[in-house]
Length: 298
Image (cartoon, rainbow, N blue to C red; front, side):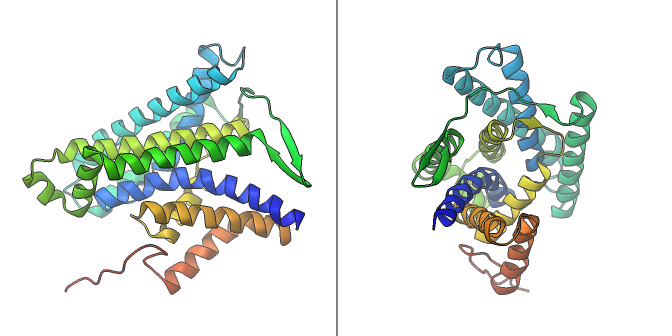
């Protein structure tokens, strides 16, 4: 029973990070009907942004809670700017040229960012300890400060995202653009700005996920976004690509499955679980858990 609860805590923590990344995939798909494969590299760049900000602001030399908050907010703003730049320079000029061209561009942008980071910073760069780690043992279950931090930050960001999408004017505009870009433009909605805002919002969440990731895994590497990015994409498909609640549910389910397999079967199988779930969901329910099947007229 203790092992089950421990894996449950670890799975929820891992799934929460996947959820923050998956939301970027699903929001961009909802507005542009494309998979932004460069999103995993936005997550990766968030780690390097956090490293630079912590180093040059002096937070790395004098760790504190206020310093961590400063680095996190600055990192999220930096990844937002990167996301908007990617949309403006790489995707917007090709928006009318077809989905395949945009998909190829997304893969190219992913490789550009990954190799650019490799050229500038190299591999396996140590990340400073910004927050001392404390672990509490409750009824035989270990709960660390990082677990609490991940849960707290994720819940706050989910509530904020729900408020933005459901209760604000820009959120209504996002839903209108997702339904029909042409109709939204006819209604006077600035489609380009809304799409840029969607990229910024998704990149902010990726920056938060990256900050949480490097606090728990204190190293940054140009390849650090590959597996979390792929698994977050699987989570988005699992929940129903384009569905915000689906992305969260799929990510939590994936995180739980990974940790349960690691705890009860073997850790060597944990990466295979994500892709096995992807195959199963595509065979059984291609639209995902929360997705809706819409037949196409031919």
